[in-house]
Image (cartoon, rainbow, N blue to C red):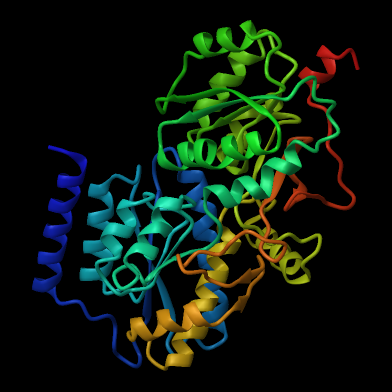
Amino acid sequence: MGKKVWLLLLIGVFLTSMLIAGCGGSSSETEPIKVGVPEKITGPYASDALVSMQGIEMAIDEINKAGGVLGRPLKMVTFDIEDMTTEKIVAAAEELIIRQKVDVLLSGYAGMGPDYEVFGQYDVPFFNMDCVTSVTDLVREKPNQYFNCFHLGPTDAGFAVSTLPGVLDFPYGFPNKKIAFIAADFEWEVSYTQLGMAPLAEELGWEVVMKEVVPYGTTDWRAIMSRIRAMNPPPAVIHLESMYPGDSITFLDEFLKNPTDSLIYLGYVVAFPEWQDLVGTKGEGLIGLGAVTPHPHFNPRGAEWAQKFEARYGDTYTFCCAANLYDALYHWKEAAEAVGDPTKYREICTYLQNNVYAGVCGIYDYDDGNSVPASENFPIPVIQIQNGEPVEIFTFNVAVPGTEYKMPPYLAKIRGL
């Protein structure tokens, strides 16, 4: 059975359940307003999801201490979507929307497509950071169906514009203008490298010498590294994009056996707490990107938020989606209070679309795809592991004052530094 047919069947079951169970949200003036959180509580993305949930938790606690929303407290209701399969998303919708009757949904990312297909069948506002153009295209193509899906930042091309020029501006002394792209076989990884980074690299005058897609969980990198080492010269930049931490760890093991004079860029996984723990000293000097972050160096509200987050959870902020989802809940609160009823979903969504919100991460001004374009007012960071910690060194391709790019140890050794 084809993937599309399977998806339609599952959505059909979901819609039938919705008709049977009824679809109204909470309405009592005293009971909690439920905040649905379909997140990857277990599985390969769990450490990233934990940080996202902490951001939501912090917002809920602050809002409740200040009197709640329309005089009612908020309550977080979670559902484990594990590896984000269509079946898990349908089950999340049945539990959170039909049974629990949540009035808003928030997730760092929840499937890059199936989540919109499922949650878009209902009016409950759904905030996410799927980061792929395909989901915002759904909103543009069918705005009356997907009006409730809000993407909390740019998609693949926006991330590329926000990061690649800064990476290629590092004071690294690139030996050539060749770049290799390797992506795990999942939509974010393929979209970011193939649709975002590779075309932009060519526009910037670089030669793309590899565009490889590999299965998730790849452990044997000998064939790919043999091809890279055989290139004359090897590429000055190697970009591996996989949100599965084990992929980049095993890649590094193979690369460091006989490293080439190449800058290694590992994308979003560098922001994962689990990856930072696993990579150990091998991660020193490696670079990647952060999600939408508070940028404490130029945003006073962001600096205050980061301090509160670190004081509460006892760890350095890790450049995941926590602050982004924190902002989303506050923007939703503003909309619900302006409308006067958390169950008037269409009116709330119209408010979100028409009213700019200044959050700790930047300015949320949704475009016609219900997405926030990357800009100086909504920047994406490039981060480097320095002394075992992620450090923001570029923001929207501008160097962060007081920071500097540090040569990775393997490159310093190759160059005799």
